Length: 449
Length: 180
Ligand SMILES: Cc1cc2nc3c(=O)[nH]c(=O)nc-3n(C[C@H](O)[C@H](O)[C@H](O)COP(=O)(O)O)c2cc1C
Ligand code: FES
Image (cartoon, rainbow over all chains, first blue to last red; front, side, top):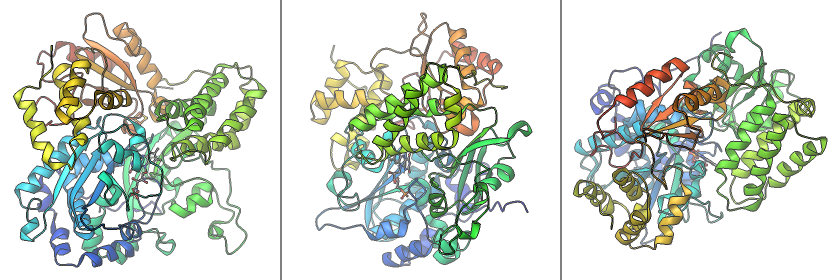
């Protein structure tokens, strides 16, 4: 049975001029906001809780619970900082929302602002995403002209401004506290937590940082009701609700962004949505949710004989046949991350793939913590040695050692995000690194390879 | 010579200022606006930003050196960012990079002698499903082949308007209709 491909978040993607307010209103846009204006803020938070909406930015934290942590301080405003930094390699989903349905994003921000008593929303968008910034900026202006924003949101005594804030090129600014520093006009170096942003966030005030897709989902939740939304998921019983955007890139026939219920399998993502591995080749490995999530292989089977194990239902099945959820992927020793998979066929050198990723982290480490700054660069250098055939057996031990010594020893999760995929590749493909000792890896990267 | 923003660009800043609780928050937006006017960030721009926002030049310098979109030296009329990260590499980014280097006669990180192109490596630009890809000034070009590159480069060479810039600004892009 082919996987369901609902058109809820993406319902406007095919509409001509889908980014204009006219097109959005014609398809029923801003009716969720009208409904939200009749509801108590606490009720809005409740609906998001009932929706089992897990954050779409990577960590999968329950959005309703996060909203519950906001700690207003007398005399200080509350803020929302929208994370549209979309920098995790492989991740391509927030860009489509901003380019094709910016008003859905704006409507989501307004409802969230009502729920959290926020009067300024800062939407931090990667500086490179010029079209997305343009469409979002235009959407904010249109919404203001129509009275959805401004001194009185649709006539209600509620003032709201949305500021589109462009970043300037730095992966680390997707990390929430680094994003806040960057928003304040500082270098994008992460802050120590606690205090968490919900207590001390932007400009010293309580701030909710949410991924853009997380908030763009809110209008649907208010429209259909939290529980109904949650039940669209195949993992509703695991408190992982609704529908979400999936991405697939690399060696597949139809790379792209697709909407599907939470909890489809990697096999469905690759075969049904991605059109299968290109040229009928065999799958070698798949990175499930952005480059920081450890790779999975088809031949590895779930080992959960204990009926109490969260993955017991899938005992004996291939890792590719486990539903993609925040907790299921964690159970497999990887992460759901941004839900955007990178597919590699059997022609791929895992040594070169590792080198590519480690060069990314070496370049993007902000340099604040020694284990990450030195460790990422060291891992990259070692991977390069393996790729060009100059590595020794000792280098393999060193590589493992360096990766293990980054884990848990840094202020933010970038270091872990580099070490985890490195350790994951070494665990499943150690033989490729051993075989690379004294042998240069074949070159790759041709458009027709 | 001291740097000053033109009045139309200053207007973008003036519209943004009251929307933030601090002036310092405008550091990145203002640097973008200045860079679009000046082509790159130099000491004069840094001094102007520091003075305008009431912060130290060291603060501004720290920001300029942290972010890849701020150019600390002059760049070409066109800037090409070629994505090198995994999804693009799996789809052929190395070949595209070599091709660009050959066609332009420069390595990544360099500017052609005629000042037409600066070629730079980029990390994942959130267009992985369209790899291999480049960003040329403020626009993305996806699913590239060596043949498509020829067309794109030709078109960029022929382009005569100066609204589109290698040093584009993502701030105030509605005020500046050049960026599509
Ligand atoms: C190095 C690093 C980069 C990140 N990049 C992003 C990003 O580009 N976009 C995003 O939404 N979250 C990113 N995150 C996750 C954020 O820190 C944060 O968890 C998220 O924005 C919270 O939103 P959510 O709860 O709605 O998912 C990143 C985290 C780390 C450690
Ligand atoms: S890997 Fe090139 S755009 Fe993501």
